[in-house]
Length: 94
Image (tube, rainbow, N blue to C red; front, side, top):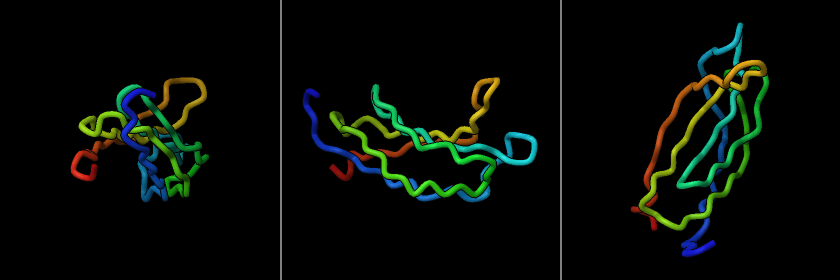
């Protein structure tokens, strides 16, 4: 990868009181994006208080690009439902 500045390791611990997007629960997972990269957690079935305890790694080439976070509910027969999003800057830490 050209101009790689470093790696960003993100620990996804858990979600608390997430929205119900299915009949009684949700099947949540988290996606992180920066530039053209995308990494995601596993799906936790039927849980609005999921515990992932996963480490995800993004390669950082431009510290000025924000890290975008999306939480989705996995659906089998339709598009996944968006449950929330956020973004944060890593420039101040580089």
